[in-house]
Length: 150
Length: 141
Image (tube, rainbow over all chains, first blue to last red; front, side, top):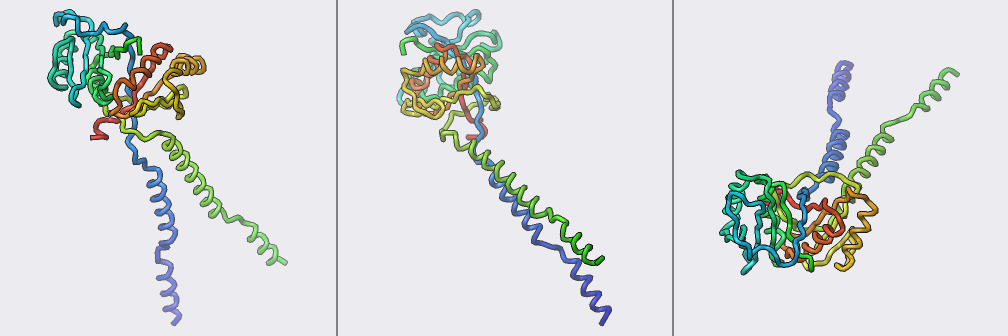
């Protein structure tokens, strides 16, 4: 009888106390669920403006020869809810082609100025697409053209 | 006599566990609520996506300009008429000094004509540190 009681006591001490562990685990779970941010992280895209007078830009200019131009003027137009691009007054058919051309220019002269001139109706998303492409390629001077009369 | 003293001594010992529990809970609560409060201040928008975006650095001299799809401009959470933009920017520039950063948050479907005035007024006021809020392309697509 005496041995049995000791044996019983021994078994009782072996039991793992679950309550406190569950408490802690639950607390941690709640903490991580709360702190987990389900929002997408926002980034920053630096920009700069180039104030150009009125309607000088850019269509009436003849495209300069490829090897010695200084400014790359990209005009973004918005027709029938689709964007279209012009680089130094030359029509570009797709964003990929525009990237390709910019890449080729970057190889010749990386420090040339890229000036974006979007039409008023172009959604910001398409403007940022072009801007981002130029930045990814490595251009440092990318400007937005703005007319003074707004 | 000896036993009473011993009993007295025992009852004086503090049980720290519940206090630590409560303090810990309070710390977590304040951490989490401050984190959420920071998130709630942002206006929900479908920002454009970009690959070359840089991490957002905490800066005291940041002026957040929200441009809504209809062209409404909100400066620090308040609607500002377009005509007043330039003088507002000039005022903020005087207050914060040349390190002032203007962060433009706008929906990707906002026509450029609604964003352009903000860019132009920044340039006219002499603020050159203008940034666009974007999402990382891989987070969105």
